[in-house]
Image (cartoon, rainbow, N blue to C red; front, side):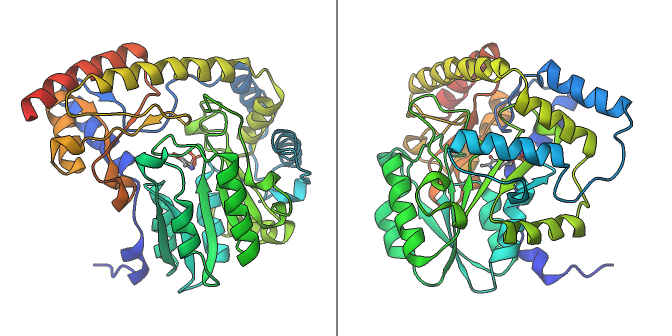
Length: 389
Ligand SMILES: Cc1ncc(COP(=O)(O)O)c(C=O)c1O
């Protein structure tokens, strides 16, 4: 018997991985499942990126590298972020990690003391709240509501932000709602962050998946760069979820602490994979643009199809690759509906409360699946939900 440390009781999880495991178990029993639960493009990684990793392996790039990342990649990221956000970025402000998730974990670990408050979106990526609880911080959720297009409730933010706030987390385009923060919203969040001198973790992993308007980063606003941590990576934009490659951009003093966290945990990110990252940033961008155009078509297919199902209503999200339809009219807990859809319709989706208490009444479906699979899922859902009603 092993006694588990008390802190483990405060660590949450990401339900997408649990539902994926359940769906795979059903498939092993011979059932057919359409996977709309996990947040990853179904596209293959572009060839020139794979070729760069193979070349690196063949050239013997199989050893440890610097904890903060290889200089070539930190340099390429600094240039890429400078160009895409219109700010100056130096390589020593970049920390490379295995996937972007560690940037979230390390930022909270490095900045939040026991009892410190952290503001974050709810429904939102579940790991924010999980890690804040883990370090003994106090989660302060800001509800995102359908009525306001799933943007931050700024009035609520103004009420909740205070001298006790140690970190504000924003995510635009957003998982799970597909909501996007408008420049005015970002401007107001920046004003409050500056006034209270609160750092902002800006999760920009879905930056490329924006179907209307231009992307705006809070780091680009006057005075904000020294108090912003940009989180970004390769998983979504370049269809590289399984490669595990992400990064943060932050002031050098914080980058040193993040680097020490890397030394204490993973040592470094796989070096041959970092060479693939350089190829992704410097190579042909057309595959990314084509993927995003295809996702726009799938979004419309999904939204239109869902709105034809009695009891379901769905807004057309402006970003990411998720829809967040309301199933309130079905008058059952969203988790029950999601479980029913997997068991009865063979459609794996997530329930809104997997993203926080304010997600009740909604489901999250990823449309990073083929149009054919989306069509099959919609048909199966329509039949199953008709039986439920
Ligand atoms: C909002 C958000 N941030 C960060 C991540 C983490 O990405 P990665 O796979 O690079 O760790 C995800 C992945 O699902 C996400 O949805």
